[in-house]
Image (tube, protein in one colour):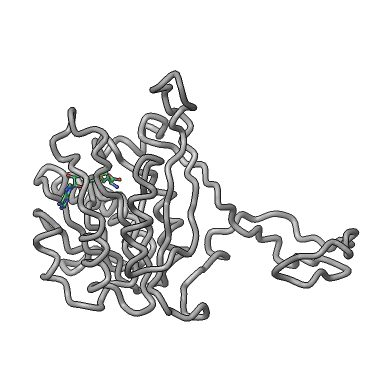
Length: 265
Ligand SMILES: C[S@@+](CC[C@H](N)C(=O)[O-])C[C@H]1O[C@@H](n2cnc3c(N)ncnc32)[C@H](O)[C@@H]1O
């Protein structure tokens, strides 16, 4: 795969004003890491958008089977969930454990988790919602073991006398452990200086899980372009926006460096 002039398509500007340049019903997956508004005293770009507007815009752009993975802090999770519930149904929430969070308030625990809410359109049939869990599953030992608690009832599956796992693949957990920027390796930080840069592996896993090769991924608030790079590395097409020219340039440079290193061939 090469980075052609058509992939990725990067825009500098306000996504909330310029989104109409994307064709309606053309996006398979949105990776949305919006400004949380919690760093706005330090970073001018950190203006939390109106999530009911973001949700409506994305409802215009997604294909009928499309999905959205949106990051949020504990503080804004309810706001995001309410805004998106107008057009979408929440499929699951992933809890992202950040290893190096600092104590901010003495009257509550460390803010060492963030959330990724995954939504699909209301009414989209279960069989049509992409969930490629085998593509991100950890490899364990295959097993075959007797089920000792046959009497114990399960709501969803009938218990079998023997549980068999032929491939050894382990179903993913709802809790994921990825570094936040302070805990990232210097190699990962080297080509991106964005203060809220996300883990490349985390976003590659979300893209593999929730879309198929050749699909189109949109990141409306791309920052250093982690989702754009992740989309390219996993064989997807990508559209990205950032309001600041510096971050668009950072994304381009990051992608060009990866290409130059021969990672995309
Ligand atoms: C949380 S950061 C994204 C970080 C990114 N996920 C990464 O790994 O580097 C949000 C980004 O949205 C950009 N932004 C803020 N408002 C915007 C808007 N209305 N349209 C487009 N981009 C915007 C900011 O400049 C910032 O870089």
